[in-house]
Length: 528
Image (tube, rainbow, N blue to C red):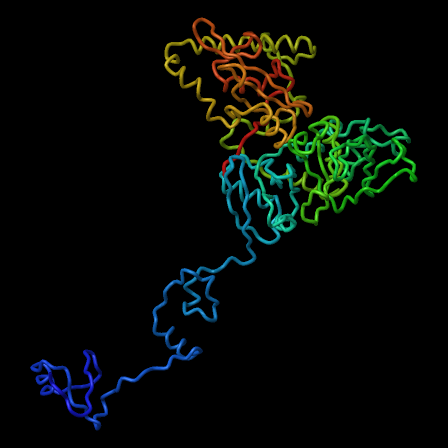
């Protein structure tokens, strides 16, 4: 063991001490790294403990200036004033942008950045662009309350974030993106939505104006006729329902305490229309014990959704419910609703990539029956009976031509392919139930010509065509049959045959056949 007398210090590699060549040789030749301490040497630095202060603003600046710019992986944990990362290295945060979550009909969802004042129309336009939808018309944003079974279609001018601000943080409320063909249908067919029996006998009618003229004039001015009629109302905190006569006016909703009396002393004020939202109720029989499925409810629009604030009403049929809900919307929004309708009609239409274009949804009165059998050219068939006979003959001739074309040898090899090609079509929904089918069609709008095709759950190898006509959903069985050893599909006991479901749909887009209306709007499900 070697003892060292006097003060000493450690010498490390990389020290700032400048050594001469002689000192370097002594150090390299020695096995000990200890050297006597020389007090007079100005280049020697003693090792001393460093006191670390908590607040060192000057040190932070010197430290950040010496460290290269590294992106901060957790910018939300550091404030800009305390973060050592340069501000220019972080992505700029979106200004006045908010994130909302929108669900599709395939149980998937998509998050979308929207501005603070984004309307429902603007959000739908963004989703159409994101989902690459070929059809840009008749899209809507729905407000869903699954626990309570409530649904409401947002108006085009409603601000999405204002609607979302009324939701409870613990609830399961969400937005849904889907088609809605019936949003402005009462502007096109007012008499279907406002039957004469429900229109109040106002002063204009007593002056000699018919109810049809009254409705047309009111809708042009952005308002609605007064509605009256019986509704079943669910009594608060009870399971029983009571039949009450209601009046819907511009000043609000009233009910009669004595039968259907309209005297002021018998009218009781129920709600103000400016502070109400109208919802349709899904599965109301099971949830609330409603006497029928045609149920809707009203609630204050600015308060969080609570069960005790709901006033649940039940109509006797779908036309009555649609009349009440449409009147609520017209009385509340007035000319704004008419402006939304005019804007939707004037918007450009993108029809690429779809066969079911909106041009075919024009009025059927624009189509006339023609006879081209003569040598002098075509003539317009004026007799309705002759027109129906010509339609049947044309349908049978089309069937014979298609049967002959499909029986050719070069087409028999694709029989298996043609029998399954319908599965890729937007109107085919597989094995959905009858109840779910009616819910899908009601959700996308009860307009004439809305349809889908599904597999039958009661008959093997059969399909069902579900079609909406006059606010009702009707179901037609599509049966497979064989003719000359080839498989066909028919809905009229073999009178008209189709080699696949695509031809069946194409045919009934132009010809009604046994259907009440032509096929116009496919009930589609959007995948976000």
